[in-house]
Length: 279
Image (cartoon, rainbow, N blue to C red):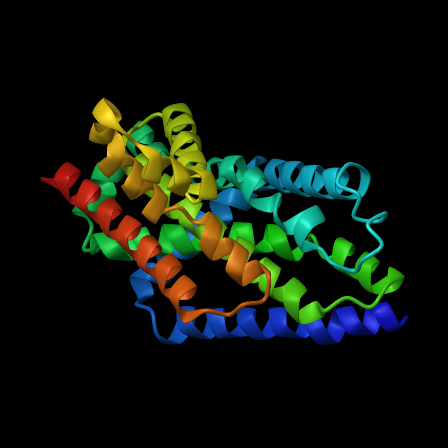
């Protein structure tokens, strides 16, 4: 019973507050055009099997691997970072592109993109509306993974503040992967191509923050130095170090600014791709 009360007070109520803030921003601060696109896109996810299949895949993989293969119950410590959160971005490398691959590719395949671009609608209205709808789907996936939190509170006395920070860090990573997918989806009309390219880029974005890559950069010699600018760029935009800091409960402004800046840049790149198609 105490674990259930803790789940309500420390997770359910903060989640409801964040959701209420999002709804307030959506309906009172954002333009009507954004709300229209958001509602249409969100409805399209749940009127097709896409969202439900992805929910089952994500929750099934994350819960099964955590409970039976990573030793979350045998670790002896009420800590979720090593057995749970450090693996979530690996799942999201595939799940986030699967959610976002249809954002613009589907519009191009059906020929509705040209119709949308002829409407009295600014590109950023459509970009923001579609992105927010896909972000809500990813947010719902993380919210539905609450059983592992309840289990940890039932079996021990974890630091729920750190666990909440882990979910926040994971959501930021998911938003970055979704933003990358938005750009690729705006470039190609094939959902399969958008998925495969986005998965490859998201994997690079995740692995780019590996400490071993920094060591490799320091040890490059001879002709390999020509690859230094590319490897350095990959290392700089790698999300792993920023995720790790936030997931461990270290609330750094630098990490939050990095995530927000990266997402903003990708959405801007999406708008450039859309404007080029309009031209």
